[in-house]
Image (cartoon, rainbow, N blue to C red; front, top):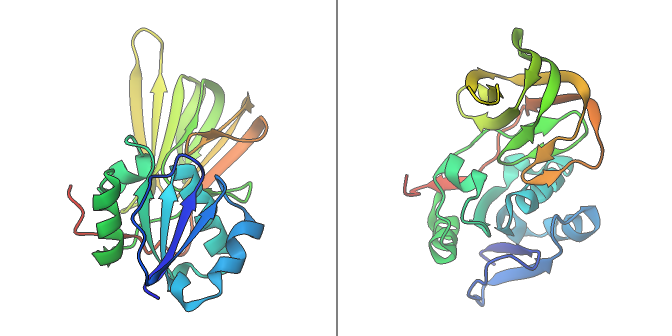
Length: 221
């Protein structure tokens, strides 16, 4: 088989079927029980995920847990036209073009971001409004109130942090590093568009030691 296609959730784009491709339909943000049994065959070495950024993050978490990041090339077919993952890495949002790239493109590794709750961030993490103290590596990035904090992967540093302060006169600061750590009043992070399960007063995002082998070479920028 050429590979394995995981179609996640009801909002995933419709894709043409191929005789030499295994296709599995999974729930949105699939977990261990749904994904892990599918990662044992040879076809899983070329994995295509169709769904939202949160669906992709859920599958990447299973690859991380099964220690298959280094042996799996991953293609992504976004369900959302405003996918942060697609914007970050120059991927097509048209399903047919995205599918063609996922099959025919080449691996160009990108950073994989983890958090201290055991999760994975595929595209964008958001916190705010919030009041607290935040550090990007050893540099203090925040002391006090922020309207919004955004964190995304960055090929050079690992991750980039954008902090917006103010209400009428908004001021934005940008930091880059391997990790961002926040201590704050209780707040709920939003991970790839999905709120975390509870409010937290501490949160850390950091670059994983192993990159994601994302198929993106040849994508239109």
